[in-house]
Each structure stands twice: as C-alpha cells, then as structure tokens.
Amino acid sequence: MKTADIRAAFLDYFRTKDHTIVPSSSLVPTNDPTLLFTNSGMVQFKNVFLGSEKLSYVRAADVQRCLRAGGKHNDLDSVGYTARHHTFFEMLGNWSFGDYFKRDAIRYAWELLTGVFKLPADKLWVTVYHTDDEAYGIWNKEIGVSAERIVRIGDNKGAPYASDNFWQMADTGPCGPCTEIFYDHGPEIAGGPPGSPDEDGDRYIEIWNLVFMQFDRAPDGTLSPLPAPCVDTGMGLERLAAVLQHVHSNYEIDLFQHLIQIAAELTSTKDLANKSLRVIADHIRACSFLIVDGVLPSNEGRGYVLRRIIRRALRHGWMLGVRGDFFWKMVQPLVEEMGSAYPELAAKQSFVEEALRTEEQRFGETLEHGMRVFDEVAAKSGKTIPGEDAFRLYDTYGFPVDLTADIARERGLSVDMEGFDRAMEEQKERGRRGSNFQAKGLMPAELASQLKPTVFLGYETLSSQGCKV
Ligand code: ATP
Ligand code: MG
Ligand code: MG
Ligand code: MG
Image 1 (cartoon, rainbow, N blue to C red):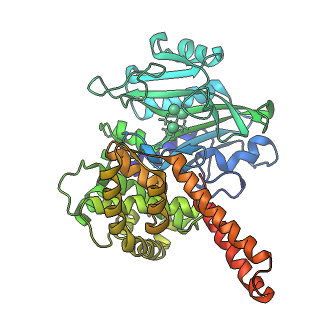
Image 2 (tube, helix red, strand yellow):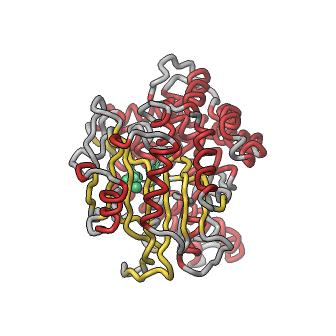
C-alpha cells in the first residue's frame, strides 16, 4: 500500500464511523501563543477539550502535519539515528469530543489495524497507564490481547510529556492517561519491548497513541477535570507505512525512497543508506512546510528553528561533497510526492524554492570556512569543543550551537554548552554596556537618540539568537 493510499484508507474508515473529516491545520498554531509548533493532531482542538470552543460535530478525523523540532517535543537530534523519528511527519488522528471514550477508541483502533490493514495480532503489543485497569480490561478481556503483550507503564519522572503513558501537549493544558500500540519488527532488530530497559531500540515501534483526555494541567501542576472526557489519538503515517510496506525504517517507505533517490543524485552519492541522505530528505519536508506556513529563516523564535534545520541539511550536503547549492532543488520532488495531499505546498513551490535558495547562498559563504575552523578547533581540543570556540563558530560563521554539537557528536566529541552560554552572556553584557554608555549622555543627545533603537535591536537579536527553543 502506498503512503497516499494509507492516508485515504484511514480517513475512509473513520468516515464510516460517523467522523467528520477536517483539514490539517498550520504548523504554526493559531490558537496558542505558548506553543512553538503544532506537534500533534490535538493542537487545533485544544480549546474544544477545554470547553471554550464548540464544534458542530462530536467526532472528527484528520491527517495533521506536525513538527517536533523545538519546544517540548523535539526529535531533531534523533533524525538520522533512529528508524522512526522525523522532524516533520504526518499524524493520523481520530477524536471524540465528549462522545465515545475508552472502549470504542480501543475497538476502532484494533479493527482498523487488524481488520482493515490486516496486521497480524501477535505482532502487536499494547501499553496502558499503570493505574488504568479499565483500559487493561478492555484490551485483555474484550479484545483478547494476551497479558504477556500488555505492559503497564507509569509516569516518566523528570519529563512528564516524553515516552510515558500520561500524555500532555506542553507543561500546561489538556492531558490524560494513554494506551499505546506497538509493532514488533522482529528479533533481527535490536531493542526490547515497551517498559524494558532497552525499549529505546527500534524493534518494538510505537505506532499509535490513544489518549484519554480527562484533565487540564494548571501552571502550578495541579490537574482539574475537563468539562467532558474526550479521546485524542495519533498515529504516525510514516511508521504505519513502514509496517504495511514490510520495511523496518520509515526512511525505506515509498515517499522517502523517492526523496532519498533525488538527494543521492543531487549530491552524487552512491550509497542510498547513507545517513546524510535521510537527514536531507527529512529536513526538506520540515523546511518546505514551515515556509508554506509562513515561517522564514531568521534569528529568533520559529524562524531560527527553521534556519537551524536548513543549516543542518546544508552541512550534510557539504559532507557528501556538495560545493554549490542543492537543497532547494529538493522542493520539486517533494511537491511530486506530497503536493496532491497538500495543495498549499504545490501552490507555493517557487516561493519555497526562493526562500531556501537565498538561505543556502547566505550560509554557503561561511560554511566552508566554518568547517575548517571546526576541524582546527577539534584537532587541538581533546574530547570537548570549548564554549568560546562554539561561540566564535556561531557569531562569525553562522553555525547554530546545535549544529556544532551535531558535528561534534558525529566525531565522538561534545561541546561545552555552559561555556557557550557564558560567551553569549558576555556578548550581551558588552551590548548592554554599550547602550548605558550612550544613555549616560557621553554622546550628543541627538545622535544617541538615533542610535539607541539600533543598539537595542542588536541586543534583542542577540538574546533571541541564543534562545533555547
Ligand atoms: P516515540 O516514543 O517513538 O518517540 P511518542 O510517544 O513521542 O513516540 P506521541 O507523542 O505519542 O509519540 O505521538 C503519537 C504518534 O505519532 C506516535 O505513536 C508515532 O506513531 C508518531 N510519532 C511521534 N513522534 C514522531 C516522530 N518524531 N516522527 C514520526 N512519527 C512520530
Ligand atoms: Mg512514546
Ligand atoms: Mg517521542
Ligand atoms: Mg506516545
């Protein structure tokens, strides 16, 4: 089954269960200034869960474009390292707004996976929240999943929104216990079942998360019940496609193989399994869709996340031997793959190409020099790249610190992040001293008033360049 057919089959199934099919919302959330990017399907329904927005339907399904490259959900550092993580991916989702709850959510998921998609039941594992006896009972008694393949999972202390069975979109907002469905890709692949010490491997891959949205978390951490319990589910389209296409990695599915093939041609790379090709194929999706949704490369906030992703992709191209521009040329094949599902991408193709080309040319001017500097620094630094060198790469050569850390990681090195932050602080301090100097009137008042906005803006830009997103 092609990825495009899986998208359609998912929506068809939920249409027959009286769900209203809704379009994907933008990667830039319109209803939540605290959230950097749409990181799951539920984001556009957040106010519906909270009770402040009413819809004309109580069941919905969609295919949502998502980005996990900043904020609470950040998979940027997993790309190229795991078989299952992207920065940009599509999330298949179905919702109940105060209508059906645990029983039907579980039944629909099981019927779709084993009935429609014909997945062998004995390859599926499920997890439930450790205290959720109701969900456990439904899986075990009603669906018939054997106890050996149902795992109770508690809270993940320290990172309550990461791989545990209590889902939340961010530090505050709607949340609740969840049950997740995993697919066992077989003993040839390293990794243990969910809940085991080596669960982070890629053998048992989580495909679907069913969240039972019951609470609203306040900034002080307290939970209050939502007006009506809801269901929020999310299944990674690429992960499901990998299972249905009998491949292990998401990067081996039809959609990615096409992008990887083109990336290989553009970079004259023979080995299609080269990690850099995967990173480039991943990043072209993230970057193109961010630009479609109105984000442009800049030195702050969302624009800086975009800039960081573009520069990472360009560095991978450079590593493959590219010495000119290439990345923007990936937009055309992306449109061929995804333009019919996302007409907005096709409509903005030349705009996206232009934005990428401009950024590519800008960074192209310093990338090569910066890489030489990195090599010199690495040669004299031992295991850790000093913070002031990482800062110099950032300040003079436009290397975001996570890019430097990524290069370092590939070579078994690390970056002194504290030292980098200190160097950034010192730079800011110099900026502040500069503005005090003018404010104290040591400069003609008229000139100072003209300069002040510039000085202030410079400081703003610097502080946001260093922002941790
Ligand atoms: P994982 O534990 O594998 O990182 P997750 O628990 O963080 O996944 P959820 O937040 O539950 O993922 O998101 C719902 C579904 O979206 C997942 O079950 C998975 O199929 C898919 N998904 C999540 N993150 C990614 C990603 N970075 N790339 C591709 N698909 C993803
Ligand atoms: Mg998980
Ligand atoms: Mg995750
Ligand atoms: Mg999950």
